[in-house]
Length: 200
Length: 200
Image 1 (cartoon, rainbow over the protein chains, first blue to last red):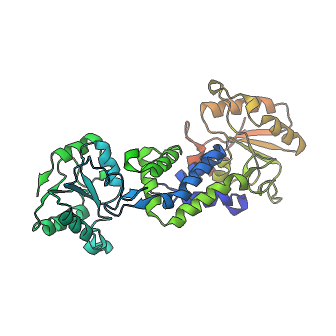
Image 2 (cartoon, each protein chain N blue to C red):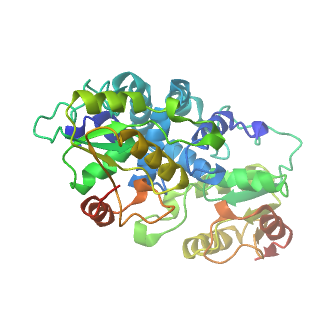
């Protein structure tokens, strides 16, 4: 396509194609939309992208993405500090917050145990979770991993690890379809899985 | 979500949601992908977005997007300068070039006649097309609009307008599914529609 003089567009298409769920056709459509749109749109998007990594940090307590450290959830004293909801990724907080079912604290593992991909317990934020449970007088730990093979493995591992601590361990139960993805759960399904969580 | 401290992420999600075919869920997924990715990715993407409108101009001859004026296709003397393929949008050039079936020149209308949306012939690059046909000794004009109501209307309008000029007028025929979109045509279908174009 270089003979077409579309190098700058091609480079944009190549970059956009790396985004999850975006193929070459969608990326091309997006690139031409950006070209057709008012230049202020691409400038705003560029500025947002440039400031993103300097503005967004990891919360030193729960590991979520935040602009302040500790994050607003960790610093919110109206929340129940005795319950920790353990999640795989920072974006899981967003969908759980939208369900308005949970008013405790979070802990981001940063992944799931996946031996085939070379991810073991040491690669996750498990030591920090144990330290928090001991230091913060936690009475309940909710395991909120996706109901997948890796999620089940990780939940089982944590369950065994937490057995000897004086803490109730529960796991999100009914509602989440097996093999599905927490990120795409609807609000009611997620609410039900919080209400129907079972002791393990 | 402002209580979540995710303002910068929310702003990015809001901007990404404006892209065609991207809803809030997809935009959120993209934003977290960008956050998780190496900062060099968002920097490259931002730089590409910032330079886009200054690097890409409109070709003063055919109206396509280009880095040089006239564009590489208009300046390519190995192409047949006596055939003009009339298209709706600059991105249609890309898919036609990929079919490698056409070696003439292009002319971008910049839209289609759509009375309900207030787009009339005067809003399109039709005067310039007529001037090119007269000045450049064109022997054939291929109408390559999408086979939609607006595309048919525009083709019919141009067909009547060009009747009195000493030029053969053809239209892409077989192959393109009615109601479909040129942008998503596969290569073979598009090749066939070039080969099977019929005189109107």
